[in-house]
Length: 175
Length: 292
Image 1 (cartoon, rainbow over the protein chains, first blue to last red):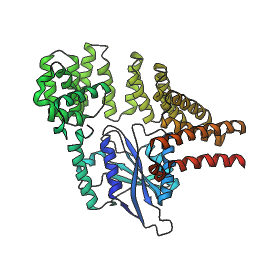
Image 2: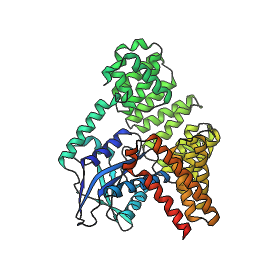
Image 3: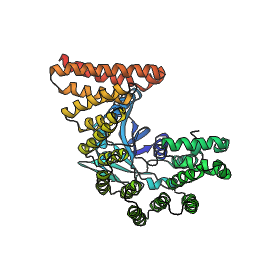
Image 4: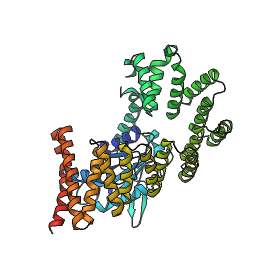
C-alpha cells in the first residue's frame, strides 16, 4: 500500500472550490509528483486544478482541459493522478458514473490513481476529519480506501480556518 | 467588508442581483443584516420585494430565523397571497420537511391550477431527495402543460445529463434553440452533448453547432475549443477527402485560439501554462497521420 500525501495547497483548493459553488456539483484533477524513476511507495499530491461546476457529464471541455493540464504537467514533472468531485446534493456522496468514467480515464494515464469524493456533510467538521472518501481502482470496479490518512493536522487546521473566514468575510468580498 | 458599503450601494446591489437572478444567498443575507436592515423603512414599497429576496437567500444559508421573520411580515401585509404561501413551502423544504412542503404546494395548485411555481417546486422536492428519475417524470408532466417555460427545459436537460441520457438531453436543447436561435450558449451546449455521444455522425453535428456558436459569438473560447476538438476528432477518423477539410477547420480554430491567448492573456502566463503547446501537439499528430 502506497502512502498518500495531499499538500495543503491541493487540499485547500478543493475545499474552496466546493465552498465557492455551494449549489453546484464541482470537480477537478489532482496533480502528483511524477516519480517514475524512484520507488513508488509515496504518492504526493502537490497541487490540484479545479475544473467545472454545473454540468460535469459533458466531455469536450474536459478533454480540452486534460490536454492543457497534461502539457503543464510535463513541463513541471507532475502527473495527473487523482480526480475529485463533490456532488450537487448535500447528502449525496455516492461515487457516481461520471466520477467512475473520468476516474478510468485518469487511471489510463496513471495506474496508481485515486478518486476523492467530497462528503459535503463533513465540510462543517473540518478539524476532525478529512472532507473526502478515497477510492482506488480494483479491476473492474472501485474500492474505498478506509483509514488512510492523507493530510497533516496542520493542513486540517489551515483548512478549517479558511473555511470560517470564507463564510464570515466572503459575503461581500465581491463588491 | 460589508461595513464599508453605503446603504444606497447595498440597495442597488440587491436590485442588480434580482435582475440578473444571481444565486448568492450569503451576500444577500450579509447586505441585509449589516447594511439595510437598520433603516429598512427607507426602502418604501421595495421593502416587500426585498423581504422575499432575503427570505429565499436566508433559506439557502440555513438561516431559518431570518426567513421566518420575513414570512411573518409578508403574511401580515398580504394575508391571502399564494406567493407568500410558497415561501412557507420553501422553508419546509429547507428544513427537509418534504412531505409537508408537498402538501402545501398541492393546496396552492388546488386553489390556482395555473400556478407554475408550486408545480416546479414539486420537482425540486424530488430533486432534493435525489430522486432524479421521478423528478424527470414530474418535470415532463409539467412541460406538457407549460411548454414555453424554457427554464424548465434547461433543467430537464440537466436532469437527463445527470442520468447520462444524452439523446433526450439533446432533444431539450433543440427545444431551447428553437425558442431563441440567437443564443450561442444553446448551440454550444447542444454541440457539447452531441460531442459526448461520440459517434462520427454526432461528432459532425457537434462541429456544425460549435461553428454556429462561434458565428453568433466569435469570442466564445469554449466553442472554439469544441470546434477544434470535434474537427480533430473527425480528421483522425474520416476518409481522405473529409480529412483534409477537417484538418483545415481544426487549424482555423487553433489559429483563433492562439490569437485569443496572445491578445487577452499576458505572455508569461501563456508560456507557463503551456496552453499553445498542447494545441500545437494535437495539430501535429493530425498532419503526421496524413503524411504516413
